[in-house]
Length: 186
Image 1 (cartoon, rainbow, N blue to C red):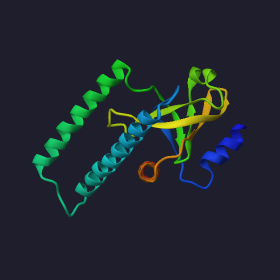
Image 2: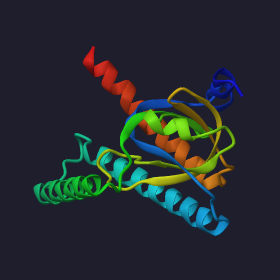
Image 3: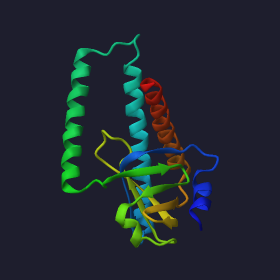
Image 4: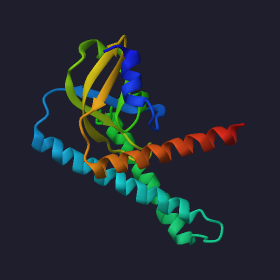
C-alpha cells in the first residue's frame, strides 16, 4: 500500500490529532490473552484519564473555587507524578518522543531509524504515553500497512467498542486543547 492510500485509510473522515509524544511501534507476536489484558488496561487508563482531566476542568470553574487544601493535594500529586515520570524516562520505560499522528483507526509514527526494520504486514503494538503528566503508556495492537523512509503507518487491530470510544474521547480532548492553545497564542 502506498503512503497516500495509508493516509486516506487511517485518517479520512475521522478526527485526527498530531503532536509530539513518547510513542513506539514494538513489532512481535501478540498473544490474544495478553492483547485482551492490554486492551482492557488501555480502556481503563483512558477512562481514568478522562475523569481526572474533567474533574480538573470543573475545579477550574470560577463559580466553584477549590479549597486551598485540595489545591495543595493536587500540587503534591502533580509533583509525585512528575518525579515518577522522570524516573521512568531515565529507566527507559517510556518510548522516545516522536511525531505521532493518530485516529481511532491507526497512527503514523516517525520512527527515526527503527522504521527501517519494519515491513508492511508486521504485527505488534503501538505503545503511547497518552498524557504528558501521566508516566504510563497504553498499548494498542496494530500492524504496519505502509512504510516510507522513517515513517510507518499502523492500522489498529479491531478495538472493542468501549476502547474505541475512550480513544475517540481522548483524541477529541487533545485536539480541543491544541486548538485552544493555538488560539491563545494568536
